[in-house]
Amino acid sequence: MTGSPRKDRAAITGPRALVAVVVVALAGGAVGIGLGLRGHARPVVGAARTAEAATPAAGSTSIPMPIKPPAVAAPTPTPWQAPSTIAYVEPGSVSFPTASDGWTLGDACDAQQDCETGVARTTDGGATWAMVTPPVDPNPANVSLMGLASASSDDAWVWGTDSDGDGVFEATHDGGETWQPGGVSGQVVDVAIAGETVWAETGCAQDAGASCPVNVLSAPVGGGLWTDLASLPAAVQGAPISNSVLGGPQLVRSGGSAWLLNDNQSEPGLVSTDDGGLSWILLSSPCPTFERLSLAASSDDLMLTCVDMGAWPAPQEVWASDDGGASWLLRSREYTSLLSPPLADVGTIDSMGAPIGLALLSSTTAWMVNDREDDLVTHDDGVTWAPALLPQSAAWNNAGGGEGLTFANALDGWTFNSAGLWATTDGGAGWQAQPIIGPVPGWSPSS
Image (cartoon, rainbow, N blue to C red; front, side):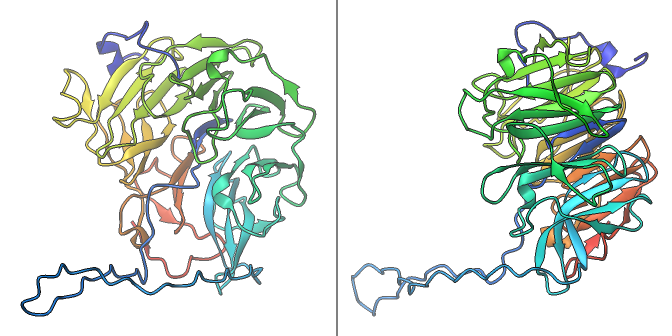
């Protein structure tokens, strides 16, 4: 940590803190943010015109009344049509445990754009992909409610909620040839991989009630029985008020340490373990009143973003810790004259978006996934942020880049949105398109 900019500022500890998604997981050295949804709106095609007002006759004193548009019958839902030969995959969740092995969960479609929920796998860094057996009933596709995590070219897990609202937790240990129930009772809301173990966090979906218990279980990545870890403190129990599209607290692992962040009740809870989950300690959070929090880790270095989503620009802050969350430093925040005055030695986030995910690669470098705005990157521990050179899609009117990020190491990374997948081999200086099976038709991705 020698020479880190945070050393030049007083650490903030004490009563302001009390604990706090995608959505970032550190899996065996791989950092990832997998977000199925963002706040972008697809272009509206054939939008209905607003009702026009009738014009009164000359000399009339009557008040013009709006013309009531004719009633339109609700369209009959089109029956789901299974795709024929898969032509392309729109990724919804991407995981690369190594620079060569990768998995994606998404909408697998044919040339007629008939789609189903599908999983594809690569063993050459994303240059080529092959479809594997789907882990769930593909009718209908409901990719935005499910996530994927992988530990190798053989081992992967899919979790979340299906179209009927039932919990999904499926595992494969043969490269996707077969899938089996994960063997965990309860709703799995997050999965994190580090070393030779996979951890599954069980809880409940958003706003499901404060009585929902939160537990963490561990199993070997190659398959085996699940073991309940130590009971979690009350500060992280209960359903979150708001979090990722999957709901549930965020489980983050790095090496032998782990953190669990739950923004529930009136204050968020943050706990950590450095003994493999045998015991958990309560940590403080510097921003207990913000609506949405995102946590990322790299060794003992942590970064936390806090944002209120109700206004634009969204009030937001970035905090950092170099001691595993025992103390925090304010690194930057959004500033306007109406929201927050500038502070000495604290950077400004010049963005109209709102952070919804983080990938922390080192004590100085982090990537921020933004809602409604370009993604950002910092190389000075969060003090200054610049637009990330991520590809943009004309389908979003060039508003925002990748919806998710995953890095296998400091150089090899991938970003995606529903227009496709892009890869970097130089730490994000440049990105190259990597179609999954084939390019998505009708989209015009550009960098």
